[in-house]
Image (cartoon, rainbow, N blue to C red; front, top):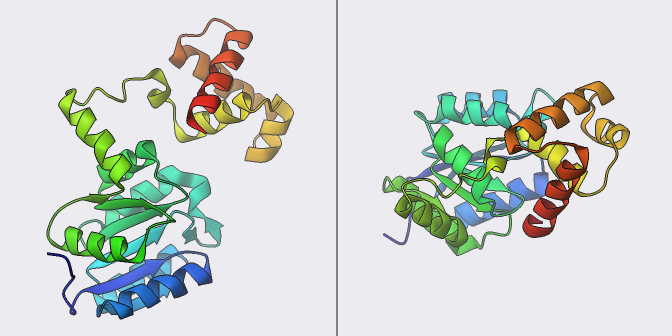
Length: 224
């Protein structure tokens, strides 16, 4: 199955008008029904109820009452899980991130791709999820297959135990940002950042600040 049925209804969600315009073009060119392009959760829920789309293509920046969902990633995953029974969700992230992909697939999404996805790849992905299969970037698929072959233990790195916010703090530490700057970037208090640092050290089994910095720098160099 290389083409999706002309009856397939698609709704797109992104806070970027150009992204919505591009997705509409891809969908209509492929002969599918473009239900709507929306920027926030309430509008998406309304379209799902009124027009009954089959697939939702959701940019991680989709808003929740004016606030970008990408800043509260766990909230978006919860939302995706809540609508998974009504619409098949294909997520679009900044890049093909297997860690994020795994979390969204576990939440109920049926696909995950980076924003650089080719038009035909997206059309094929829609057909794939309509056929009851998962659709992900090739690099993510290879990672998931290797994980399955290893009994699901590929992501056993202690870093995988960090929450989304802790990982943000960890990455900024690895980029040499001091506590006050991290607090400003993430709109947190310095005390809260220190609390995250302590939790990260415990989860990673690190004894002190210097070893935390070394681990953070190594992670950034190897993953970004």
